[in-house]
Amino acid sequence: MHAVLERLEAALPDVPRALLLAEVRAVLAEIRLAPADIPDAAALAGQVAGRIAALRSPSLVPVINATGVVLHTNLGRAPLGDWTPISGYSNLEYDLDAGRRGRRDQHMRPLLDRLFGASAMVVNNGAAALFLALHELARGGEVIVSRGELIEIGDGFRIPEIMEHAGALLREVGATNRTRIEDYRAAITPNTRLLLSVHPSNFHISGFTARPALGELAELGREAGIPVMQDLGSGCLVDLKSAGIVEPLVSESLNSGVGVVSFSGDKLLGGPQAGFLVGSRELLERIRRNPVYRALRLDKLMIQALETTLRRLLFEQWEQIPALRMIRLSADCIRARAAALAGHLPGALVEDGESVIGGGSTPDQSVPTYLLLLKVANAARAEAALRAGKPPVIARVANDRIVIDLRTVAEEEEPALLAALQRLS
Ligand SMILES: *Cc1c(COP(=O)(O)O)cnc(C)c1O
Image (cartoon, rainbow, N blue to C red; front, side, top):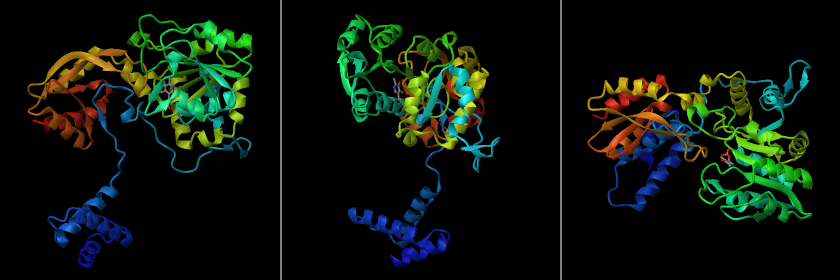
């Protein structure tokens, strides 16, 4: 052990001794578990040096998303595009005009006002927005939800469980496939605090189905004096019908008369991870005063990134919001880019296909694209090699071919992608 440590200290003089010692011990402990072939001091030192090198390099790295899934949850959902984070001090909670304390939500306020024409607040993610609203509006009382909307959003995030943790009692109504406005009306008791509608963003019920229109629910809430909330999920601000995406717009939800709408910042809105609550001033003021808000509030980096996205949305600069730009890319444009790359890759084919939007939004919706198909000796091994590259390339495999969808690849990334693909053959 001593010899190993001496060797390492000489080779890696800038690494703290305690860290080297801990890594040597960890390697020795691993060897004790499998004592078959005991390495010599040089080999041991090599193993430790490898672990130190791994600790030095960042784990979160940029990747090239060649899957065509625009809002790929595993790849960070919406890409942020050009953005220079403020690394030093900022006027986060400082009013520069008055020279005294300001509020961190002042920065986005003028943009939120114009984009929504309603009261709005932002927290860390969609789940936090839903939790906070339930905690304030429904804690200690009942929330009426349709049985067809008790969904799991992903990674164990389920509506009934979040409700329980927010201290609200779930009152299920209707059936999985059919719920009527009368079902909600009949379930109202003096203990009802909220009527909740959850947009089924990641699944689809078809066939013999019924659910009340949002406007009907809003009207029932008004009659009964009970707030109505919609968990919209994706938060689409831009009409994407021309691109072939049919997703309810935030403005449609607000126009239907519901009291609060919640949605994510990094789905179809195209910004950083964030959760919006938009709606009536009275309800939003209540939610804002809830002490849990402090635990869920946005940090300065996210405020800066989100402010940038909201400004681009307000000024209709869709091209500068990468997710929107990618969704709106025409199949012809993608075909031309794929054909240009194929020209440098012997045996490559270009075929039509579909890009899915992803991100828990628009489950069965996709947009037409063109795919670059690469025949390789072993597709699984080629896919792993792409993933191990610098930068890593995430691609799909189908029918023993590597499948590349350029919809989610920025043009600046194409040279690196081409080089990675050329290395495969
Ligand atoms: C995605 C989604 C959420 C959760 O939002 P996050 O930003 O992922 O926390 C909640 N509700 C619905 C309907 C969703 O689609």
